[in-house]
Length: 215
Image (cartoon, rainbow, N blue to C red; front, side, top):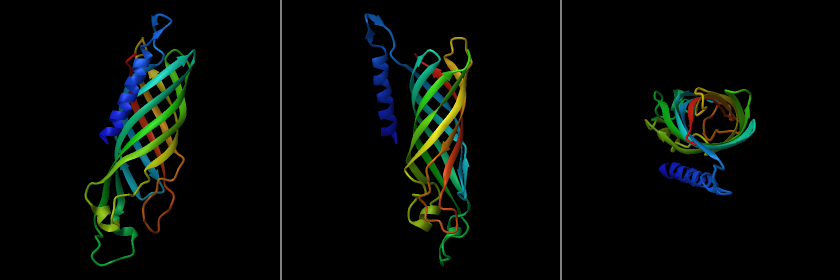
């Protein structure tokens, strides 16, 4: 997991170096850079699973031209997926298989949204665009799922989503902003071997965050 975040961090540091390059003899940024922290509230529709809220953190680069802008982010999120019923509730009854324990799996995602921005007024900014997601790890915290199915690969490794939200500047220089966005999945993330449940699962998330423009 660490190598993915390190690669993203190094990439954005390189972009920061480009941003501080000389332009016609002046030290003028080509792109701007910032950091973000917050929380993610995810739901897997049609899945017999409850998802607990979790933290998010990341970095981003952006460039505005007038009221419009483009932003590229690298966000890490962590949530816990817990089955609503015992992990073995959806398999053919077999002697010796656990029929009481709910599975609890901790998921860590790397999300990369590419967003268009529009400055609605002095403090309020709208944003939206596509997002690519990658499941870095899915850890079976109590082994309930693994004991029944032989692995913890309940979800697909990749997914795509559409992002829409807004940010509001909290300071006069607009360096600190509060944001809210909806992340609506458009691909099936079900990789389970559950029987007697809908085969297509999609993700929907609400993200609340604070972002700070470093430069």
